[in-house]
Image (tube, rainbow, N blue to C red):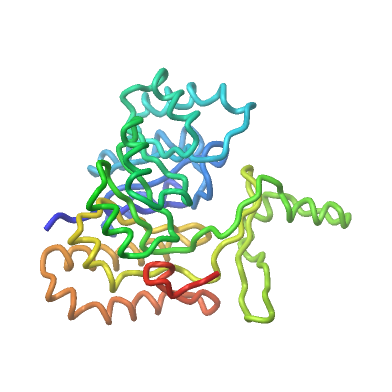
Length: 309
């Protein structure tokens, strides 16, 4: 049975080798000027170094250019794409057609992964972007298992699904938290919001906290729980889903490595010995739960319509 790619999000260059040893097949990196909700900031030199290290280990690197672009950045896209092609990036993530148009001229051989995070909800749309030049579609986090399997069965492109980590519930291009503190006359820089990791929107009625951070792309409010589907991989593996993503945003490097090891074991068992995977599922989930901080529960997101935000 075909094994899906295990795709992870390092926080810095130093994470690459430990994650390769943990079983990662590919990495998503980038800088916030062009990419949305990245686990770490990789400038051009870091991108080149990450690609070199990963390629030495036979792994792939995808670079995020899936931000929401306004006119002032459009002229930069071609130059960044040419840089990525020269650096040897294995693919570029995009959501804005401006990236697709720039790639046709500046880097026509660059593989493209369509990633809007919200609108990839049916196979017809995935195929539309495939016919425009995308090699892969990254499915929305809000669709269930049946829809994922049906999409893969009808897709003309590779399909990527997030299997672990927090998800975005809200984004505004405005820096809402920073503007609020400035209005109050309190000095809180955006950089503090990015690195602190302890700002939450608190819902006392449900006793729930939603992590918040800000970057160049605005304000992001994240899910109160982390997706974990480590014990429910069989249907997607059997359907031939091409890539399973672990999103490490707002996570420590040690956590991402530990989770990567667990999913490497789960994927290998599921593809090579389904009966052994069935027997190991409960213990794999227990191990995943043991890694979670007290304020971050695990759930299955929208895979079975259990979570409603």
